[in-house]
Image (cartoon, rainbow, N blue to C red; front, side, top):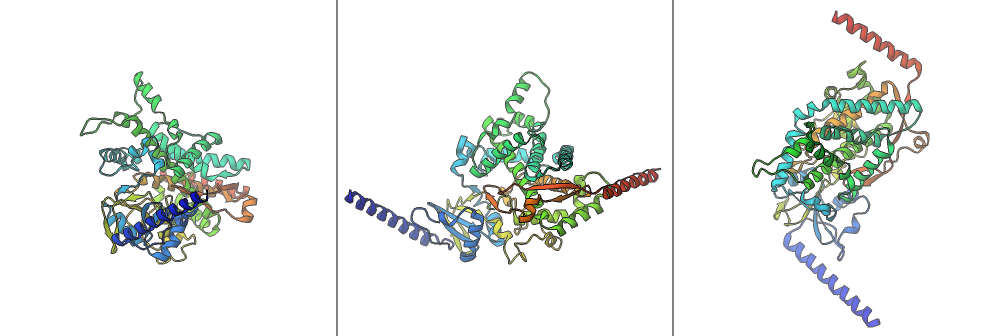
Length: 498
């Protein structure tokens, strides 16, 4: 027995030594960017912890904005500055645009059908991107679906008003998730997938999406998609709804005349709903959490809405362009709490030189957009929520300003960004517009301790503790003044028209 233990120890020592030698020689030959020394076999996995975006930012502070780690046997290069992100996502976009597909994403062949994981050279990837860009996210389609988003925003306002009358707290994340989910599902399926007042159903769907974003697999989210029902309806001769699902079912490629198989459709819809609903909801929830802890910012948002919206009962998408402070709130939320803090991993198709270092072929490449948002060389007091910083500088989040990249950049930029932009601003504006009727407060037990701002890390960065907020009706005198203002406005409008 003792001999076996000695042999086993020797074997482990030999394997570890060979592994370390391979790492040392590989690093020397490849001129890799600097990084922490890896342990045998596991590499730097223990350096990641429960919040990899924060751990990687701390390591980058020691080793530089372009850094190498060994995660198991995988060489991983991390870009943690705006300049390094520009190199990865713009200057060397073509060489670094493949995906490193995790094992979980290979479940049910998701990695072979998903627009998020397919390589850009794939005809299927090009077809999926093209049909989404032209028929779901194009400006004309977004404008055509504006009534859908307006209706869902109205339902969100009514839901909050009902809870306010009952003195019940609003689960901000669930309400935003359900609203975003139905904005998407009505545009794609012509039907709601969840009900704001049905906590069990919407909570179940939200739980499945959250599980998906953590595991990056394909759980039973596809069970919610009415593909089979639509196929049966079409077979029985029912008239088409002419929505995005009908378009997908009728699609035929220009080159081969073939349509999308059912697995590709399920993967595409899973991508759309997991990326479109959970990220938008998380952004709205983070924004409300920050505002509830910043009364001055909440007051500025309210004053702007009063000035721009006036006596109108609801916010329209066309109003958002005038709501500069609201736009600054969204940008500041993206800076502090980017939905995908490390974006999705890329992979080097060829050996690529960046900043005098070599990123070897096959290396995994991450962009730590959370670290860029915390860079003190870019942002004064980066840990503070200060929307005003975006009133002083012209900066966009659509992939051209590398200081703010919540949706990525280059050919792998999130295709749903135009829709997410509209949904997030409309939902947040709707919740804040209620300030003319209600006062947003934290529940008594939360108010004493403050909002729990701890994160849970997955593909999406969310609040670990769901945000609960109270919409308290204004006192009768203030409501009376609001009513008088509305009446006077109506009279004035009528006289003007005459």
